[in-house]
Length: 105
Image (tube, rainbow, N blue to C red; front, side):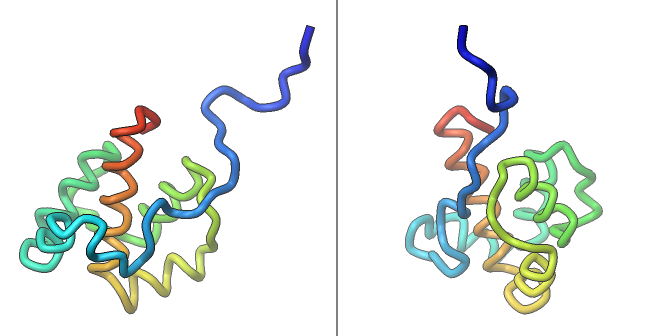
């Protein structure tokens, strides 16, 4: 009998599936983010069963990273939200959509 070494649903450490400024991997999401940022934010909050009024915050990004064991830090989350708010929000949405396609969201 084999020993259990991982909990069900746990993931190996990884990176986000797309880069922070990886605009051309999903132009639709990027256009959505640039021209209707509040709508994209609410869509992400809905995907994550969070309140839409909270918006895309450092806490939401770090919670997502923790849930899927994505490499990074609170400081990195803070900086990406502070200086690249639209890009980091689009990156989060792209990752959610990719995980949905892969059946792991």
